[in-house]
Length: 613
Image: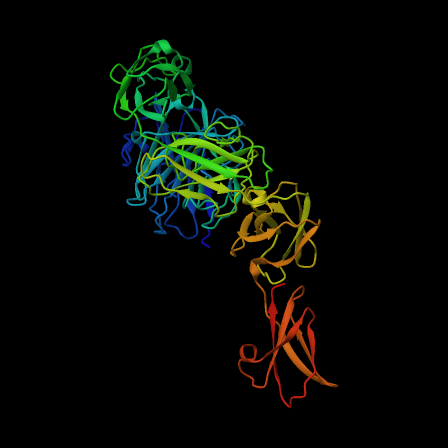
């Protein structure tokens, strides 16, 4: 485990607009312009290894009439593990308390607890081949969750070993006026798979600053006051067009728009297809529906946007960037079928490695969708507990394979870990992919879990139980200290629960979570409640017996030893001192620390082995 200790040196700023970086317009090219100066708005010093990955040079902030600019020196990935570094720049606009409390890119150990919770979180990742800054998204807090928009390449430059620059158009964040305060924080994440972070600014001793999967809350931020008046005269344009499905198309704009101007049919002229309605309008997108059969692969379709379409500043669509044409995408009709052998479920959902646009996506961003058992949507026989859904997907050549799983209507996964269904989609040939759900219980049950920590010498501030029935770490349960080296918890399983379940224990060291490294444990729910699973050693770790003594007694010998409790011991004997367990005789097993052997041999040698309970 590589840990970091961060110390923060805060630059005290005077009231008004006397900021570290005067207003200017940087060139976004990864080269530090002279206008940035040498004094950052805030900086942090990293005191422990790896000192080659830090934010020591601090963050620079400036603005002009159209953009807010962020600049910082960044390091190459010092681990060389081929995983993308993530850089987060998050900020609140206008000293508002409400905002996001979690990392929008899924670092489950990172929570936000600043005085002014962030309204926006810009997340960038380094390319793995050249360390340059790559895909970058602006995540906007909607009040209930994060919504992400990709930032164009022109809005970021730099990366590892370079001065990294980002800019965000003021219209993207509500056109904040001169004098508006931004409360800013920044942190780095080593790779996608890490639970926690690396380093942050301003420094925060409670923030998880380790290569390991530490958990914690980020509480610090620094203030920046916008220096210039709004001066957005740049007309908006079309960024690109994206097909949603066979009859859906989406136009994406290069800046936030006035939504009320987007969902008016009179503001468009369409060619090659029949417009039948709007699907949605957001700040940067508008979705349309076409009359069936929709968009084919051999024809060309177009849309022209009229001047009534405007951005937030009232600028009409750029006449040089107001039209776009496209050809349709080819699809395969994939029939998903799920058999419910217990005839228990009245509704099921499926979710897989596809996006909202029905394309392959290893992030599974396409959401959950209903399966049907009513003879519609591809279902053959209503009421037979074979749930189905016909779903169009874009072929990806067959590599990587698509995969999918099943949940109940509350979002609980119903397939065992590793039980996702895989299929290849090399071309537009229609296919069927199927699975059968595990059996479920017919009566409610209480199951008792015991985690035995008697041989664990590492710090223990608590033990958690995580499993398929807790959505794993998301709903991990706190176990109760029994005071004898064990931790206990009783879990109630309602009728209809999966009969086979999987779980692990988590050793807590403060806020750090240390999961068992063993394979997922499994158990099958019985029919008599409560069901006690017995004592389970954390990580299956046990220490063998010690101080074995052999005492002659009437008619034999008595063996004594010391060792752990709540476990069994196997006893072996042999006429030779070597390979007693391998070549000797198995005498029996005991749960005590003694054993009687009735022997007539002149000489015997004994060995005792501890076994898992």
